[in-house]
Image (cartoon, rainbow, N blue to C red; front, side):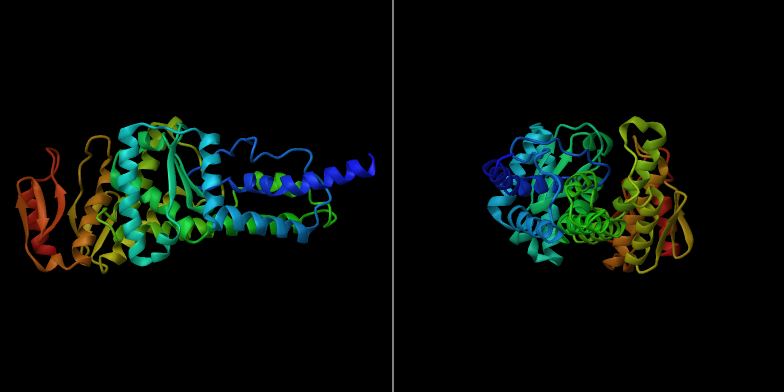
Length: 365
């Protein structure tokens, strides 16, 4: 290779490296497993980006990429358009209207505890993937798989998933995860100087750690409790995943090791729900208890199992205690048990009657 050819190759590497790093950063922190994006023309990588990248230079390039695609409005909009090209866009009007409503509600809820959300509003779209997932990546750019709406039909549960992803965004987990992944790749390099494999290793690394997943779960609960959504939906969505993994395993994908287990996530939310109720409400094995005494064991309803439904009942009770409605009497309004202004459960034909449940609640509340 002539000196001129070497010079052109060097310039080309410098030009393409930021885009390659941007592509690797598109591997998001997803609710389930997000497939790695396919390289596109603008965000592609290739054999031209190889060995000889120094550790300090790699960090400098990553900082440059994050500054553009995570922090600047122009960069994050460019990144968003590339995401849509890579994943495809589902323009179904009904699904998009549902998503718009949920995102607006969550934005208001998050804004109540973290006003910085208004500094970098979320971009989002529905992609064509039929698996169950949603993900957030650089620049508050989010995408929701079409398949998520097949698994979750309840708006409260969909809000939990999106709240989790927005938790990743609010804490800047995609950028932090990328830096961590790059550091690990540099430490593990054989020579410490030939780091061309960093690009590949980061592309194949989801970057989001288990502590980050737990933090996003906790934030989702906080956001939901500042909205009109049922806080019991946080545990309910994981019960639904557990139920469907038995009856419809093809609808769900398995988690990577960087996610807590389904049971752990559900049970962590149950503890938060009890704490939110000022320790008045507990739920276990489908039985909802108040002050240590059994209140109800809800029946299944529609495609919702008895266990999943029990978390919604517990969520309503927890909200009643958190907001002081427990100071008022429980009563039956048709088939619905009310505790003050808070609905607790709308009884179906398999449930105990609303009048009977209201009587029980007044005795133990």
